[in-house]
Length: 144
Image (tube, rainbow, N blue to C red; front, side, top):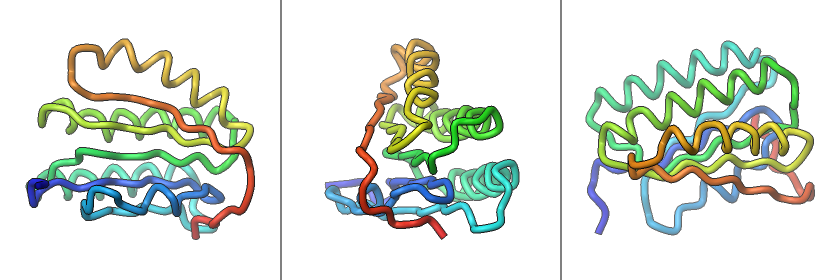
């Protein structure tokens, strides 16, 4: 049985195929944060930061999370993902562990793998698991 304070968080960039990651096999409440159509990536990160701060200070424990890429492979998108990894893993470390998946389906795949190989060693011994999921491009549920 899950602790009633546990949640899953799905952060999806515009264009990311987030639907499969919002479906909960463990019956956890899911917080879905989607980049809006005209929202700059920097503004999206700020909104994610503010929402996660409220969630954590409200007593919720993020035990699972996914960052779903939207196909961008540029520096601003990579920097945003790096910050979102920190925003999601910091409360996981503080609460005893969790799992974060980096999800890609397009040109952002190599950048996501680079983030994984950079951050994973920093999380050793923390009980936070970082993994990567790559989907071949197919039907896309647009984050809107």
